[in-house]
Length: 204
Image (cartoon, rainbow, N blue to C red; front, side):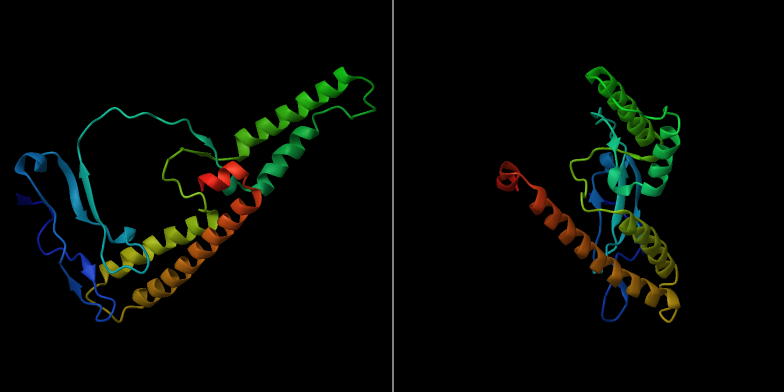
């Protein structure tokens, strides 16, 4: 077995002393090592409330994957933009009068359905379906995660200067991010309980 992780790369920062150490290593066979594209610490991916840094290992092992069909991500939709798209298309319709037959009603229903579908295609982002998708994830968490990754990287760059303000900024945002995740999970669970059918309750 050979070491894949470069030497002298710290993999842990203790919460109490803030010192950097190297308790984690990555071993693999020489044959597998020839397929390694990357094996390094990625400080930007460290989750909150943890002292270990993630070790990102990319291995070139090509394999055929089933591509799931993407779907619309309504949870991350900018609803103000969506309403503008709907209103713009509603102006294209002729002024509605009294509907005197089933065929006239069906025609208007088809028009409204088309307007909604076109607005969705323009204003709603697509998302790739994943079995491990976090259903409670929202736009606020997405923005906070991006900012946390930046501060994580910044504090790692200044790891030998513990008085740098990046460490305190990272600590504060990490705490807020953790609390926001708990709120999002609780809110999503409560919504599920309110809307779940009997079968879904038993499955959960």
